[in-house]
Image (cartoon, rainbow, N blue to C red; front, side, top):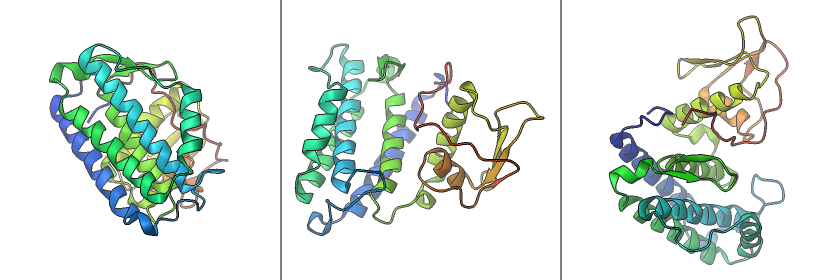
Length: 251
C-alpha cells in the first residue's frame, strides 16, 4: 500500500479489513467492562483509561463525520471543535466502565457502517482535518488505524508496541519518516532490521543513523516507548509530538 493518491480500491478494502482487526483486538482486550479499571492511569500523563476510551470514541465520531461529508457532499450537522472535544473528553472519562466500553463499541460500529456505504469514487474526495490540513477521504481510515493501534498501547492493558501488526508498522514508519524529513528532523538514516528497510532523511555525511526493529523505532518516534533496543552512532534527538501531518505531496 503506498502513501500517494494513487491508492487502489483493493488497498482501501484491505485497509478496512486491517481496521476491523484492530477493533477486534481492542475489543477482546477490553473484555468484560465489569473487570475494567477505568479510573486507573493510562500510559498518557494525566489521562485515565476512561480518558483514552472516550478519546477513541470521539475520534471515531470525527472520522465518521468526515466520511459522511465525503459521501454526501454536505456536512452531517455541526462539527465539534477542539473546545467541544476537550469538554466531551473530560466529562466522558468519568462514566462507568460499562458506559465507556459500550460508547466506544457503538462509535466504532457506526464508523465501519459508514465506510461500508461509501461509493468507490467518493473515497478520493478531499476533506479537512480539524487542524486545517486536507487529505482524501480514504486517508481517514489510516488516521483511524493509527489511533486504534497507538491508544490500544496507551490503555496499559498488556498490549504493547511489540504487538503492532507488521503492515501497520511499515505504513506508519513510511508516513512518519516522510513527515520528519520534510521538517528537517536531525537524523540521517533509520534502519529497521526486521523489515529490511532503510530511510534516508539527510545527506550521507550526516549523523546519526538509528538502527532497531521497526516496532522499536516506531515506538520511539511515537513517544510510546523508551529507546531501548535502538542503536545510534550519535545522540538521539527528541522526536516532535506525534502524529505529524503528512509531508506535502505524500498522501
